[in-house]
Image 1 (cartoon, rainbow, N blue to C red):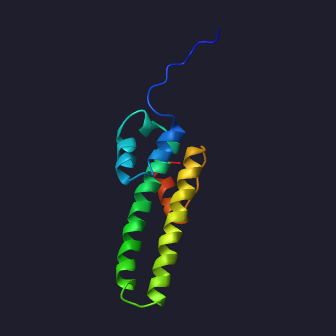
Image 2: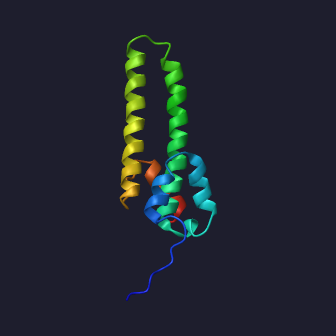
Image 3: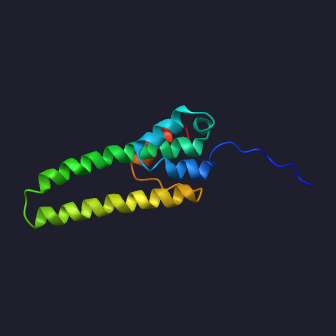
Length: 115
């Protein structure tokens, strides 16, 4: 019979996907071993942190656009939906073991993760 390998904690795919829940698990995964030793988990954690920064920027822009009737509201909708689609793509790819590199943010995340 094959030996069973004792697994402690989450798989890399699960940790990478959970990094996108909020920036808090992402920071935890960057600090706690063995997750901080996996390039895949580090990449997803850094991309999650940068995506959170982008979400804050989009929120500020949306607050400004809220004062512009119709056109501003449509732009707000597009920005919000675009951010949601990016987030969903990142989560699905991470849980599947892949990477969705967001333009600019993905390159920064890869550089920070050492990938």
